[in-house]
Length: 114
Image (cartoon, rainbow, N blue to C red; front, side):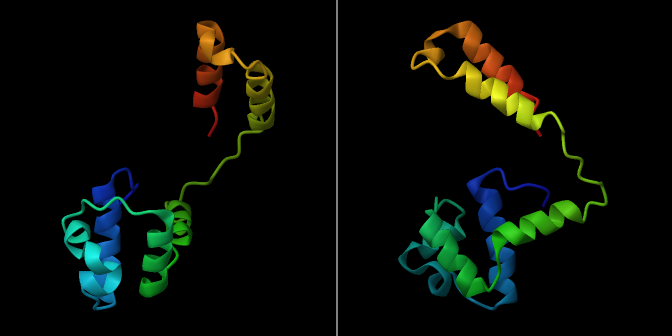
């Protein structure tokens, strides 16, 4: 799986690890087993951390490893600090979100940050 974009994607990844550890859904998530098995449970961070502990994995590390294993070099954009500074300057007003032009500038800058 390339990216986890939905709750269903998340539970698909968890299910793979769950099967490897030979755990049932009840052992993994308790009373929310049916929702998790149906890939409908929207877990809190606390629940995700407990799942990671039971599965003996760190989802954040795994995702970072998968990205680096793509074989593509990760390039850092040297302009990111400047772009962030520009965004910071644009949002200093308490009313910046009411100015459509400012909002568009912030969005345009944010979309270029990678």
